[in-house]
Image 1 (cartoon, rainbow, N blue to C red):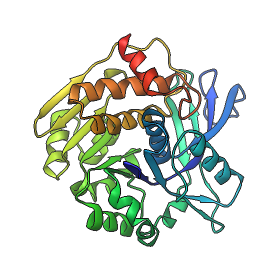
Image 2: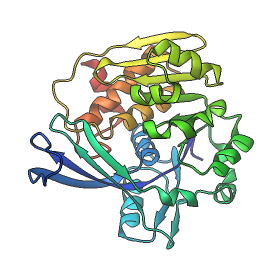
Image 3: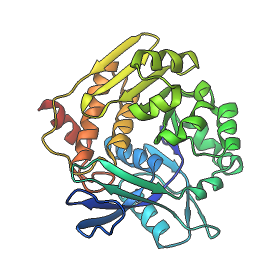
Image 4: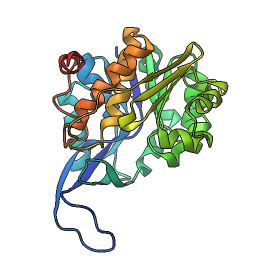
Length: 303
């Protein structure tokens, strides 16, 4: 059975890559547009499956009965990510995320249709309770229905649960489930939206006081920050010479956190490994870099 079960959104990502500075209010024509399988939880799950190999990671999600849903499931299988329990519905189309990246690879704008997440219900999870009971670690997302989050808290609150906020707008639902989290990952904007603080240590004090065991804040080119009851760690990596797209970097980083936890790595080693995963993601136009593997990450770490 899978060691890690990931519960949350799967979507199709449609990303426009700007070749020149974006001008608002007018049609921008000098773009390259690509589509790929996405969804924050699915992305993390695929990255982790590429690190661990087939059979170790299972996805619980919902897709529409349409070509986009078929594409998602096909890509999951090709990456070694278990998706046999993903439900397919005719009631809603597969979720779509639309994003625009600026010439430097940073996200300029993004919009997501996550309505289909409402089909990830307690009843659906209960049908897969054996899979959940046997998992070592769970990954969840704050866009799950409140009843589903309560079900996870009541039935699996004793397991290590990881959550990646994913967007500043999701700070409020994230706050409602801090008490059941083993590890929370956020970028700097998300952490500030969650706590109202700008100082990293004050952010950590507030989050840890709510019951979270570990907090990881990514700081873009500034590196990353780790906080737990055992102490605080800051990691500043050497600068990257070039980034193609930052769209999937955070998801790859979180996959690195999960892998590091399973391997029992120290906080410093965890940040180094996760950063290497993110750096590989930055080199790809696709949301998940198909070249990501354990050997590829190890090669980055040796540089």
